Length: 115
Image (cartoon, rainbow, N blue to C red; front, side, top):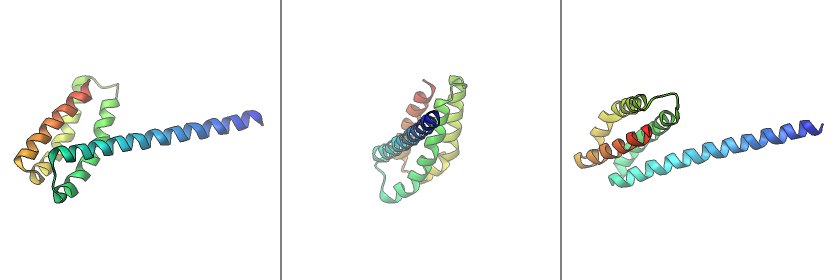
């Protein structure tokens, strides 16, 4: 019975750690999205349209960044593909100046993803 209790406690601890890690990761992504929103100086209307797009991109980019089976070039190509999918939407929402800032932020994210 003692081993059984240890197994249950270990399983519960691991589950709690996994939950905290995923929550922390989600909070980190939310903070990044909010930071981008502030850097772009979005209006409330723009924010309502842009934030869902950025929230959807975040986990995809993070998954690519964390995929050690991909080469740097593959990571770069995959992140670029994600950005290209949402680019027309973003361009339609943002002013030309905001769009240029977004492009700079994305270039930095791309650089981070491959390093």
